[in-house]
Image (tube, rainbow, N blue to C red):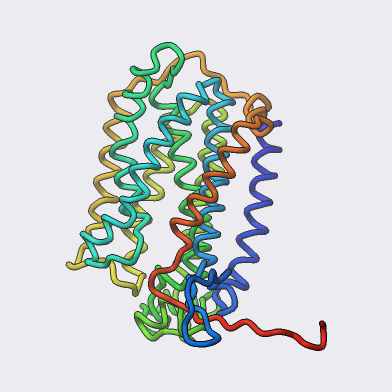
Length: 348
């Protein structure tokens, strides 16, 4: 009953945030969050760096997903310190990979690829867990399948909720409805996205502002969020291998399928590198589930897991992590701004 209450509460919160995001984020108002003036541009103006809602939602999605990771691990009585070290190492590698993989695949220096970064994380995660466990000895006991299952749930939720950032920035956009097959046109005639704002990626890259598009970001957001909730349910019932397979097969196969409905540039070739990465990830995870034994006597308890929320070290670390993610992903390098400050004399 505690498991169901927890998942219903989390599901309700996600439904509220996602519903609000689908309604408002395609609008021009929700791309730029703030501007930080840097240097003079003429007599009155200042050149500024734009901070985006994309960064805000990416940082927030990672905050929520990593907090869920810690709750699940704590519920399974797994070393939080060891898991935190392993997670930190994975993030330290995946953050630069988000830009490096995009440079290699798309030949673009000023963009990110969550798909590429996640592929790097999927491949390296088992080895990092093993390394941290060996270095930490008895203090860092990290059973492979439960830790990977919890990380997979965290990744699924993080990427799903992070699609709100894509909606805000107008990236990862779907095909125009009038270019789709008849069935797709029928399905998305009413349920679609219409983006506004000339600075959104969908405008400056494809000129598709004001056009009804397949809401591919919304589908991904809903599908992955539901997958994370289903995976959490399985995890809390000790079904670790099933959790890992469910979340990985769902996310990676959907990545392969969803790219057939996307209009943004995904690299060269009929089958993109990201689709190949998705297929390779499914095979890789399947082999892990085949050869790694499921540990016995691990009975997760969500009440115990929620204790981590009140840990001051966790709270402080999560806040710092949010700031790092926001600065890294939120600082726009493809837009700029000019700011002018004036005195409101009637208020003096």
